[in-house]
Length: 338
Image (cartoon, rainbow, N blue to C red; front, side, top):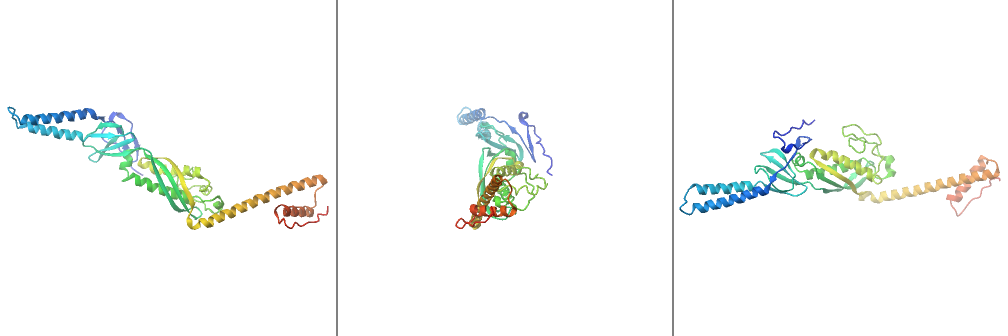
């Protein structure tokens, strides 16, 4: 387990509440306005120029005047180094000799300690397109899947100091989560019975705990990639949020943008789907015919006032089936004995 987060030794400016997460305790502070500092720099420049002017014109001849003038110019350059401009939804992580001092999120023209090392980063929403990736689904069929992920930096210090490059981290974790999602579900509803029960440690919708607790046996295979878009988007979003939270990244939305069989099996799978559709249509027709026959026999028996013999009933059912769904070019007649 990670050690408990340690607070910086310096007090938080203005007593703003800190956000504790992992090894970095992030807090924000407010910088002073840069306009008074800019006016001071202008005054120092004028003072230094005036001192140099006086040093070259008698009767004021003092060797200290040029030194003071140079000090004014050096102090001006030092103060100018602390100027910083931040746009809305922008932050600057400040370090002092390698130690984290705070995060500046105040938009505008500000002045900071010139000794601070500052790293700017954007807090705006970003769109990450992942894929299309070639992955094997729960049945083992190669499929192509892609997703669009909308995310933003929620904690600038963690995104800067916890990982070397948070953009590459988001790309890698997005691809990993998408591959994991595709491998847990079959592509088509007709393949659900072939999907092997899986156990996982992801978060999803309660099918995994993220702590090593096995998921229910049929938790993932009950959802297909083709028909479970909303549920899969929710599972993907929660999985990404769990992966991005330790580095201060907030995932706002995740949607599957591309889904198809891999080109090498696309033709065969389309034929399989067409055959499944024909079988399903035949099943509906057969069920409808059986329902019609039951109604016809019930009506016939009601008119006759007695039930048909088993042989007569079987012959009548066979005859009606031939008429309804059989070969209509040759309709055999069966003597029912009525």
